[in-house]
Image 1 (tube, helix red, strand yellow):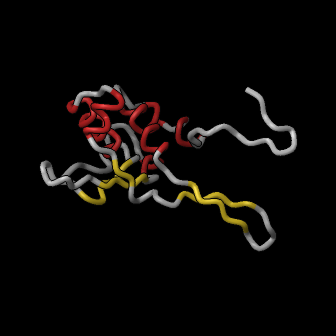
Image 2 (image 1 turned 60 degrees about the vertical axis):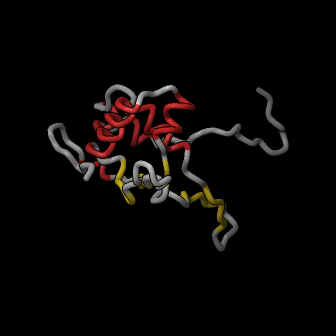
Image 3 (image 1 turned 90 degrees about the vertical axis):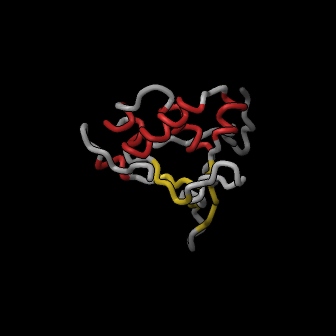
Length: 132
C-alpha cells in the first residue's frame, strides 16, 4: 500500500475506539454480535468540521438514525434471520444499540437504530435494553 508523501491519506475503513473493544461488554459478545456491531459502526457518517483556530474536528452525524435490514444481512453477508435477531438482541442487552423506530414486516418500513454508549455501564447479569 503506497501513500502520497505530500499528504498522507488513510485508506477507507471503520474507526473503532479502543475503549469500546477493550470493554467488558464487547469482550462478552458472542456469535455474530461483534461482527454486527462493526457493521453498524461502518454505517456511521463522519463530518469534518474546523474550529475557530482551523483545527480539524471529526464528528459522527448519524449515530441515532442507522438502518440495518434483515434482507441486507441475509443477502450481503449470508447471515440467517435467527442469527441476526440474536445478535441484535445481544447488542441491545449490552447497551450498544437502541431501537429508535421499530419497522414493520411487510410495509417496507425499516427499523432505525441508534448507537449508544450505555455499554460502559454494563455488568454481567444486567440487561440495558430489550426489544419491545
